[in-house]
Length: 268
Image 1 (cartoon, rainbow, N blue to C red):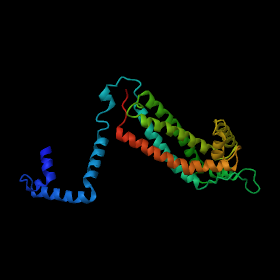
Image 2 (spheres, rainbow, N blue to C red):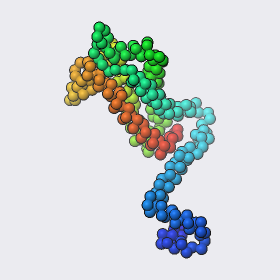
Image 3 (cartoon, one colour):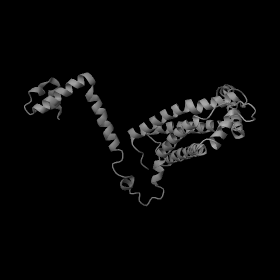
Image 4 (cartoon, helix red, strand yellow):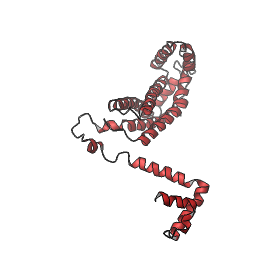
């Protein structure tokens, strides 16, 4: 529709346009009535924009566009590392929620037992709970797979130049996500509260204390004091179950949303 035709419609002259049929007039009147009340046109424009962004991300394959048939470094599975990381994250969320039904973040010893309640619950999950060993193994291996996939995804983004303008903001967001992924893994590593978990907490505590100016404050905030104990386990549990899932899920949604808006980065 030409600009002059649009201006005529804006003035209401389109009602007298003989080229319009009754159906077209009825459609335009209905659209105007709905638009005045529901801003329908604005949302239709958003849907149209979303449609074209979705369908024009990859109009043809990279191999066709750049003639990369003989490039040994161009390996398509590298472009699925981001989606594989998300699949591992979903698997971690499901298995972690199921494990949470049976785990208790208590560093105190049960009556007549030497081990802590948290460790005893891990033993119960692995030995007495039906499919418990499989459930914990899925959670553990999915966590290791996610860390590896996120790391390799970051390397692929760097070596293909996908971190450059206009994707530098998403690159920074990805760096934050890999740091949070490592923190996710560390907090989960402490939860069994066995010897490995205790000394991992001790190492993390020493690292926090070594930070200049805010070291003691960080140690008290994250570990509940200057030596690993019950406050440490409770903080790691809250961080692992209640804080990081919401933060990481939100950042992943933003990360994927930016990729969806900008399109998949092509190799350069």
